[in-house]
Image 1 (cartoon, rainbow, N blue to C red):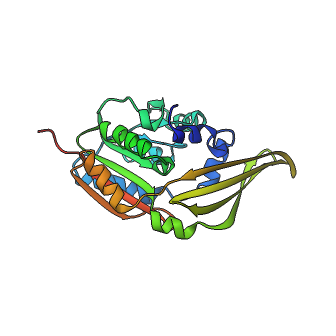
Image 2 (image 1 turned 60 degrees about the vertical axis):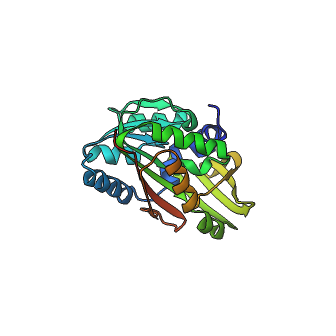
Length: 255
């Protein structure tokens, strides 16, 4: 793993040692996103499709796409999340990989990538990630992105603490809190974790990192620079907050 974003994926507690809590902490509904992707693939006459889920997390969206008849491969930089996704989608190929350095064949009708691109803070990592994603597409293939929108993310980064509790079973629970602040074009995020067993604290940890949201102009320019023929950007799909974008870009047909 070479990029800073891949190191975050390998280290962030609910991507790593608390991966079992991921689905309990990230609860945005799956169906709206999957339905939107499926509809666009059908409209492009690419259904059923060969799909790469880049940054697959625990595989919830991949599982739903498979249920709609698509073949989905999985890749993530977190070994723990990838293992959960592979268990959920036993017929899928799984690749542990840095998104900035994918080395997969251009064999996919669609590539989906939700959230991960926000972790690309440097221009070099952003370019490398988009290169990886677009290079994985067949001619005429579709790229689907979910990213944080710059201005809405700045407004939401109010420094307030937000908390959630994941009940893990076996009389264990994980108490999670996060706080985001905006500084110099970046989201600075502070996360705190407290693992309790029978109501007593077993382990405490923290993790601080930065994210860099995207503007519509930046997305459009970068995707076109990487050869995408059309770029459609709309408000986020299936998100409980208004700081996301739903992006669909099309790879040119051969010739």
